[in-house]
Length: 523
Image 1 (cartoon, helix red, strand yellow):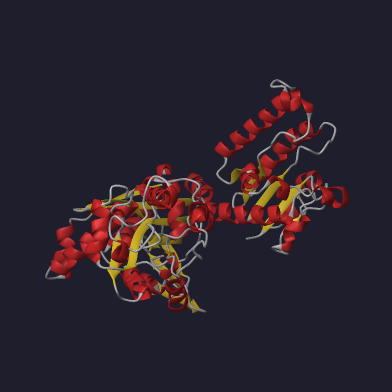
Image 2 (cartoon, rainbow, N blue to C red):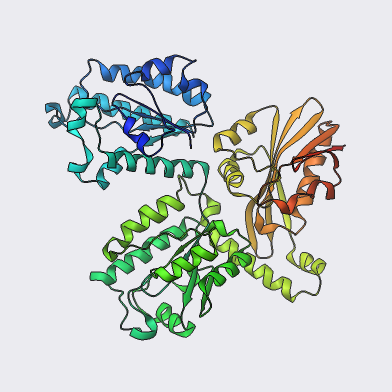
């Protein structure tokens, strides 16, 4: 992540944690904004962060800031692939007027914050950074560095800079849709206190006070994550009947067995169970986060499944829930918004498991496909699906011919452009509606088309959807008098599955270099 910072205080200490961060020279933020040849404009930063401290006594600074917002809006419009962050403006710590509800300064600050809110609503690549959130996490005496302020205009402690950077990385990952998909949980001393096989139903810690409440609150927070579209699984060394009794009979259990997409409750090595889950869900191991209180189990998963994220469990159980948010949710499952598809994720995977069961019972693959009664609905340049389409480009890896990542702003611009067509396909069968599961972005130049993106959710791979979708696109292009369609396959570690897709669909291979294949098809 390439980060640039513009501020009226010295932010250089943040480079202690990443020397490649660009920090605008002290006091030069206004000049860089106005100069189209400055680093701000000519470099392609992933994130640009504007941070202004209102404790600085500068004459007419708020008026200057209001004018700067106009230049910042120009930057937002032009740098659509860059995330622009602007720290929420807070009242100065030391000024008499803060006690006067209608003071001119307070009114002006409120007015500027409303303008920031308007920009956030208007642009998908602009977000307000709540630095007060960081301040609430750090003791007041550890937040400010007054001694450094008078020597070098450094306002904050080293710890604050570390947390600032950590939060910006989390926000950027959420903006780009870089999140894990599955949370795998242990049970004993993880979802409840104690060991069910030794302590029994009445002996485990799960209550409305004390340590038992810590675990109950932990379950509530996990439940929220499930409602955001994260899949939950259990991997536990236990007797299934003992575990079942806890879920069914303990009155203070928040989570139920049906909240988990797959449960592996047995005495096999946990890394083997996790590999089985990956196969059953048809997901890569790098989609998983594993939580277990036992250091031996964590070490084994790290050794045998290095792709799986295994955060250290907190030694102080009283910090379990704050740890969960800081080291798990914000780090691996950051989200800026929750889509309708996210909320249906659990049910979608349950339906997929039922499809697999049906497939095993059906005598032939052809009979299986017929029994599904698949219905496909095709869409073109439909703005209702912008969020979902951006999400698909960020998350889809296996059936993705070019693996180009796009933001919501990018998809919106493609849809509105006369030179592009954005296709989408919705899937439904006897088990239910899966929503938008396929996408293609096609560039048009005169009577030639170039397939920039062609992808399909791994949930529907192998049911012929990919060929139906491609044929529908080709039919539409032919109606637009397109004579030739060019396409390409760009290899990654994960999309080997589709390396020959275009050839199987009747495209002619015209060039192959360094694994990249280029194709053409005449219509």
